[in-house]
Amino acid sequence: MLNQNRLRIAMQKSGRLSYDSKKILNSCGIKINLTKNKLIAFAENMPIDVMCVRDDDIPGLVIDGVVDLGIVGENVIKEKLIYDKINYKKNKYKILKKLDFGICRLSIAIPVNNTYNGLLSLNNMRIATSYPNLLKKYLDSKKISFKSFVLTGSVEVAPKAGLADSICDLVSTGATLEANGLKEVKIIYKFKACLISNNKIDYVKQNVVDKLLTRIQGVIKARESKYIMLHVPKNKLEQVVLLLKGAEKPTVLKLVGDNTKVAMHMVSRENLFWETMEKLKLLGASSILVLPIEKMME
Ligand code: ATP
Ligand code: ZN
Image 1: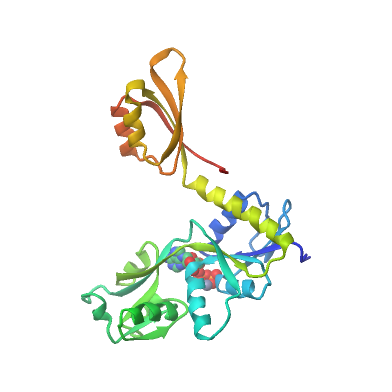
Image 2: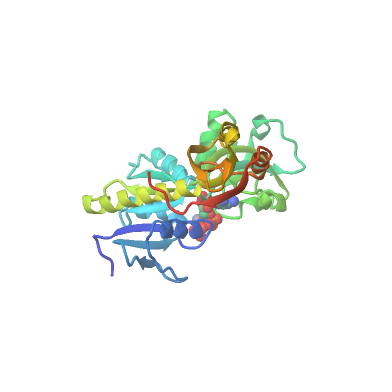
């Protein structure tokens, strides 16, 4: 049963954002049991309900207040923002936080055998896209005239089917473009998944939102950080610190039975690549350990 006092969050039911959305909520300590055909799941340990829907429905659900928060691609939000502006609709939601998944770009792609000499090559083209407003915003700003052909899916087959000269679509690896005989010629926007919220959230729910946001920030920080431990020759400490640029204030500890080396522990905002580990080794460092961090609160 739906309870008005519980915070409601919408996420994608099945698609590119589903796994990571569920994972970030789980990492925030929300215990939800999402099974395949369930539309809604009630957290056991927090006043939170999670609704699983199509990603395109998420902004509308947030605007109408059916849910309080939503996890959706910035691409969906930004396209809708322009549409709403054109149609004089008021914004009834805000972006609370950019997340660290769902990374993609909106790009223009043309058939591999066609030549591309900059944006002017696109003049008067018919471009197939699911993002007509973002495409228009970009090409208008560059003074390129074009015709858009709106397709909600399978945009990449439009040139082959003779429906368009080129496409403007979301890309992550580029494999879909390649499989359809297309080449990416211009990235027009870059996107991530984000957490959006309805403008009106009562103070009881706001407390839960604040707690959730702090935890999300902690999860993201922990995911982009590493805990590094190593043994370092005492006379090489400064050089080692210079190599570990993303590291914050290292702790230095004595080693029992070895006066020439000390143990260094630190949190680093950057991953430690094999190349850096090899350089550390050349400086005489040993026992180099890089560990993932599960949770972080500053
Ligand atoms: P739904 O059935 O929920 O409507 P969909 O087919 O519209 O799903 P997906 O393809 O699952 O949506 O993509 C969801 C979101 O994932 C996109 O809106 C975008 O933010 C992000 N994304 C990341 N990489 C890609 C990519 N290569 N292609 C499309 N979307 C991507
Ligand atoms: Zn969709």
